[in-house]
Image 1 (cartoon, rainbow, N blue to C red):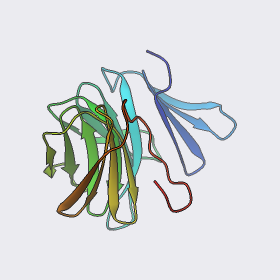
Image 2: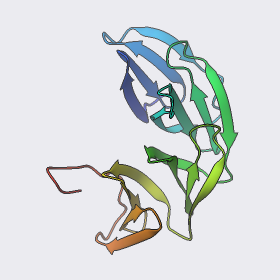
Image 3: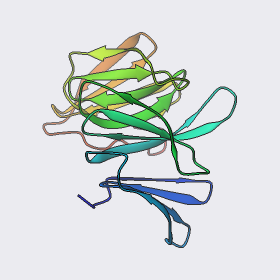
Length: 171
């Protein structure tokens, strides 16, 4: 599919992801396009900052692949494969949180290795990191909030939760 599933803005460039990865300038002009890296629909992208301040762009797809990209050259630098479909990602604290079909994986931003996670939950459609908490919206209408080893679950919706946002001091 060529529809855009996710976008991010970094260093005056717009990363548009869906069937391909397109990098565009502020005017919308195409700078670079990668049609062959991801074999499945790209569902999410995020900016990941290392401890040393270096930055990479991560993109993920429904086949379980995550690719790290150099934001200057627009080329891939590393990849990893998870065993579930990937729907969302957000960096928070020492990890990149990855929303999957039946769990949330915690990955190291250094080498993309799996460092833990949360299991036995419904599909995670969206993740939001704010004030050292990670919020997740799920297919079963639940919203979860994780901080370190504790978590809170709210049965707040009758349908899927597909988007979370901050308005004032509320999520």
